[in-house]
Image 1 (tube, one colour):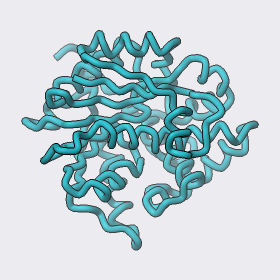
Image 2: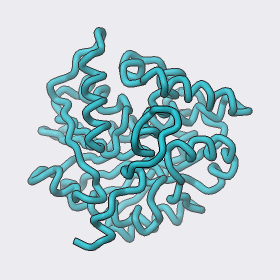
Image 3: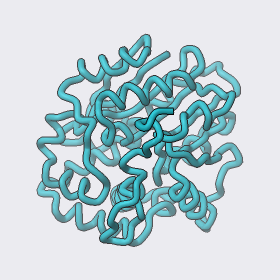
Length: 282
């Protein structure tokens, strides 16, 4: 294994923690997003997964945002990717395996496991995050963890996803927020490793930041980046995003605007698409 492959993702490396949210930028980012979801989308799952510190920082970020409608993107991204996962599933398939990598404290896994009891749902993240997430869900008085939901711990920069899944192949692998921290060549490299873990016809669903949206949200993204790590994977166009996935070996690549998916789901519409959803099929 090369030195590059042995190096953990930047978000998995220990760095200064000014607010007591976690020892790595990845964990701090997950805590802030959990806080935002609890404030904006207070479902039992979102509330169980958020800590007081994450919610406090989320409220600060909300107060700094000049146009509150910009925060609709947080809800739109969560629900939009979840909906795209549902759409990617074959209605006649049995023994479904759904994987959510870099899952953070997102409620997607437990919500999918609850609504699709015939599917096995596996979440993958750093050991600290996985340990804390499972503990929070099991402590929640008004939630029961479904038996078809499980967790696996790994830094996917060090451990190949194929080793994590062992001999299993997934129907759908989703990743929310992961690509933002990867340089374009690493986005493609990660997508190739994910491709190897999909069943024939399986689908990889993710989001990739869009330069125009990021430019609009400079103040909010600067604040978030100071806590959660610098965004590297900002792409200029939908065509460039498609090319990254085609280079990784996917046969079919479809790009969705989060605002369009939000409108279909009758969610509060983001005022601007900060990233695009990418649906890449093996």
